Image (cartoon, rainbow, N blue to C red; front, side, top):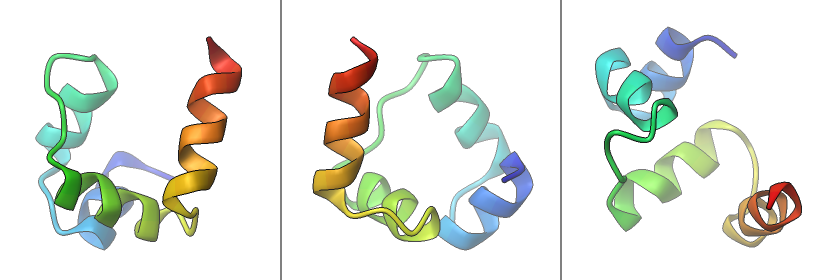
Length: 54
């Protein structure tokens, strides 16, 4: 998924998505949940994916 599509689906700016990817910003819980919805991943599923990468 492109940054543009994710931003549109989550209702945030493409620039903000870029800052999140670069770890220069941290999302609010609301934004994080909207990103999960946009990616069609549950919040629990997202946490599991992050934990596996560590």
